[in-house]
Length: 91
Image (cartoon, rainbow, N blue to C red; front, side):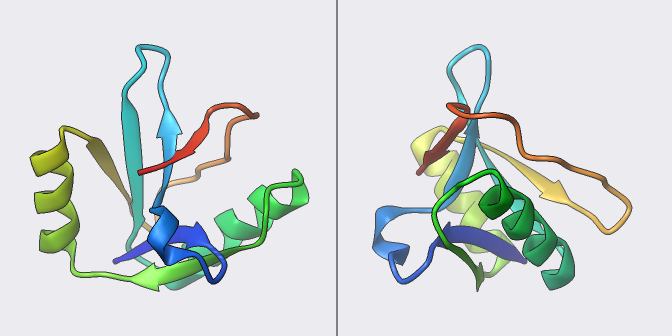
């Protein structure tokens, strides 16, 4: 599994989406190619330089559940496009 962070700033948290109800959703990518494509789309929209970080799915899910965050797993069959700002955040 892969999550996104700001390049060289993993300590600032993982990239997440803000939903219309104010909750945050951590996106986890099954394939590194999908994470890289999403990073390219973010950066094309003027987002700061990003990187992917490999994580254990169980650890990420446990952290989300512990802090009350939602998460979604992006599979190779999914097609996702980043929303326009300011719907981005870090958790």
